[in-house]
Amino acid sequence: MCGIVGFTGEQNAAPVLLDGLKKLEYRGYDSAGIACMYNGEISVIKASGRIANLCERTDDGRSVQGQAGIGHTRWATHGAPTEENAHPHLSNDGRFAVVHNGIIENYLTLREELIRDGYHFDSETDTEVIVHLIEMYYRGDMREALAKTTNRLSGSYALGVICTEEPGRLYAVREASPLILGIGIGENFFASDVTALVSHTRNVIYLDDGEFAELTPDSVQIFDITGRTIDKKITRISWNVQAAEKGGFEHFMLKEIMEQPGAVKATIAPRVRDGRIVFDELTIDREILSGIRKIVITACGSAYYAGCAGRYALERLCRIPVETELASELRYSDPLIDAHTLLIVISQSGETADTIAAMKECKARGARTLAIVNVVGSSVAKLADDTVYTWAGPEIAVATTKGYTTQVTALYMLALYFADQLGLAGDAYAELLKALQQLPRRIQQAIDMNASIPALAKKYHKSKALFFIGRNTDYAVALEGALKMKEISYLHSEAYAAGELKHGTIALIEDHQPVIALCCNPHIMEKTLSNIVEVKARGAEVLALTFRNNHKILAEADDLLFIPDMDPLFSAVIEIVPLQLLAYYVAKENGCDIDKPKNLAKSVTVE
Ligand code: F6R
Image (cartoon, rainbow, N blue to C red; front, side, top):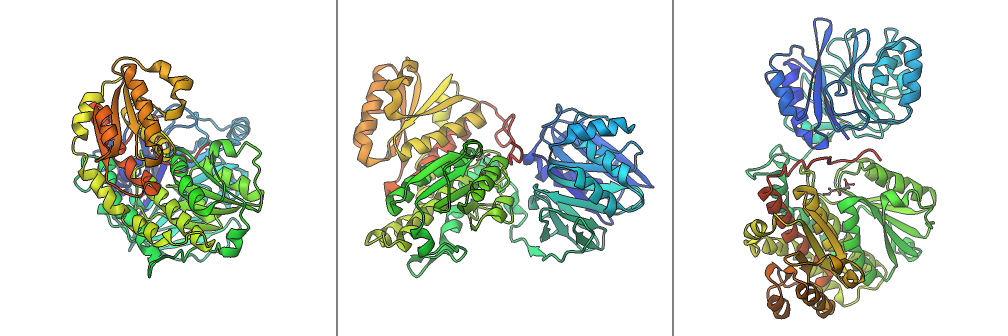
């Protein structure tokens, strides 16, 4: 839940580390720190709050000397977000400093043991045990000390370590937390994410679990716990620096909303050849598919809601039962999953702890796993039998937008592809594929036809609560719309299946209560319309989301959001766009920190 960086080279390390930490701030931003080596000593500077505070304290890094160092941006798990708990942590003898992303599950036992052995602790963190273990095990050989230390740790960790005995040298270790090496000329780096590396180098090495790295300005060596050297391939990153920056928009979230036509196109286009969907990356063939009795989709948060939206297309086209399960629930539910289950795992980051745990649980029960993931080489991608990348590019805003729409698009693609494999697509195939290929244009239309959203946000931003209602896919989108609203604007927002209103929720409707009604499912439009009438009769103000020519809804609603005419089977990807924009502008009216909502982090790598 944190971001780590490391640099060794000719230039002063601190400005490079701070620059990297700014790029990683989305991973955690309650405190930050750097440690640099100079003249045989390690100096550690920390600040609570945003990276900006650390920049101020160090004159943007200029006041800190040393050409090698490590940095950390934190999202607190063990211990409050104070300066003491911020990383890097220093050993008692001052010779070692450590940054850590992840969780050490057995830290309490280790802490007691270390205290008994005379070590003192300056923080409440789980991480601090690591630096004391390194000091305890160091006998002039860092590789040995790291091997002995990691042998004692249970949990997840990406570690960056420096030692005064080895000036200019960085050590990095990965176990169940992301870690990438950046390979430069006369300088080398590590970071939790490539966004911190691309302004320096496009050549990277993805470390795998159990791998250690030793970096100097001129060399990078990777080895395992026994010290045996491992050969790794260098990957060239195609993302450019601008792709990871705001590109003229006020917030990353707005930029990422606007990028959706391109992102969805990138998900679809490479997989269509000669009028057919082709998943070169999949090993699931007709025979395997025929043996699948049910599909279970699992994920967390918006990725879970993407599954809720996509399941309708899968069921409709493939005639296979589809269940959607929150990963945090599935992992502890003793699930009825076997070799006839296809588990579809959805994750933008590919590092969500609950998602990974649910996946492992289902794999152990024999399920075949297919991951829909955005981050290449992430843990979910590595664990899966098959991976479909969404190719949305880096998503920096904490609230996902293009991550969600590309995930739903990938599910639509799979639904049509599987149906084709099973011989069920029939004559509708060409029409459905055409509808899929039109999605990028439809998203752009949905953006263009809702210019009134900033004005609507001015009307609704002071509401005490917002209710989202809909049926079937509209309900699935309502869930994601309500989540977007609450997480960035802090307005209490809830989604209800419209047919459930009279079973309880309608008691909450009073004069001027805003109800956002999603009405994009022609086959049940009349039903949702009657729900609109019911809430209006009790004083609600209805903001309806529908097609431009849907006169019955237009006549009842107080305000309107539109989607273009399209195949309703795939409309979730379009319906969410006006709701993302509404959440964005409401949050802006409320003066919220849109890209970094309070209490949230982009990548939830702990349970
Ligand atoms: C909400 C949001 C989260 C994530 C969830 C899963 O805007 O972004 O709800 O969808 O934490 O994250 P990934 O997709 O990285 O597994």
